Length: 103
Image (cartoon, rainbow, N blue to C red):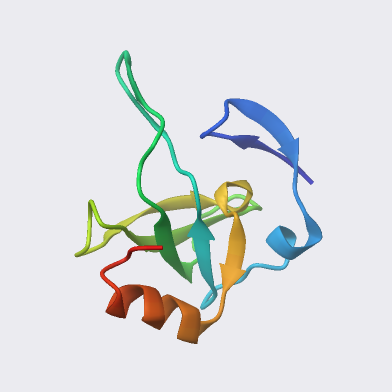
């Protein structure tokens, strides 16, 4: 499956483990970046996410709640599977939360 990777601006081929992500899974975006208008922020802290729903989503997209040191209370939004660097276990996700979302 090919999807548009919003963090790199490229269309990329998904990895089998990314295609296997499902509601209830946890993931890490190890090196996120962000465009805000004309400003580019390349070195943001890791983002830890929990996939909540696939309701009204195209294939490869989910609704997820994501957390980081910049947003420790979490934020709900659309998540594309190509953004994930790796899948996490619930225990790894909980350990990151216990560590203040630091890697």
